[in-house]
Image (tube, rainbow, N blue to C red; front, side):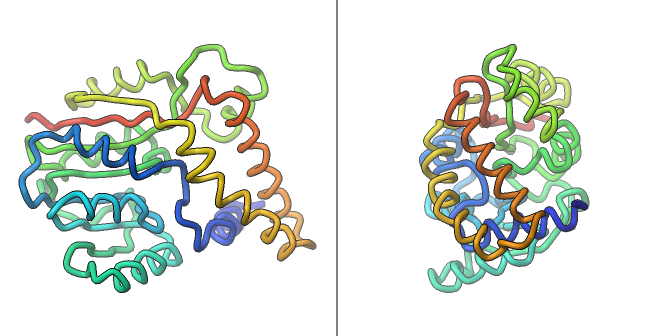
Length: 252
């Protein structure tokens, strides 16, 4: 299966779900509260916003304007529908854009937000290339897959080697953060329920319908099998890995 077909099936599997990846509102607001020196009406950029669960949480907690970007039109349409229904057009701007080539000038934002998406271009590359978009004194909040305990079980290690071989420990990610010129303000584990309940809960309900709708499609069944396996790994090994929230500040 080529990458284009794989992404097409993942979009189909996730379309309409409240979240496209692990996260919850409590964790988003916890991370936001650690950005102590934001202006009263911050300019915020949400990179890889997906259908916008965290975008909406940020809107509810700030008086700023949020520019929400993603490369998948289906997810932006879903977010746009929510924005319209909730009358948030003045607070959320939607922009289809590639995170590798964002159409914004340097020093445009007080806060850049990216939950579970920086891996697409690579954690270090994202931190380096997005830095100039943040005003001095501004923040970058990013969540990244990380090892919490060294020497994971063999089946988990093999899965990550196949799916995200660049995963590192929290300490190694912090070292990279400092080397790239950021101040590390704080970091914390995304709680396991943000995976098992907020993300996997709705996804588990969707999977049987996805399988049935694609009963004759071997590629789709493979995606469903991989998703099932991924969920079982989190059930068994949540103490070993997950997402780490990093709250970073540009001091110069």
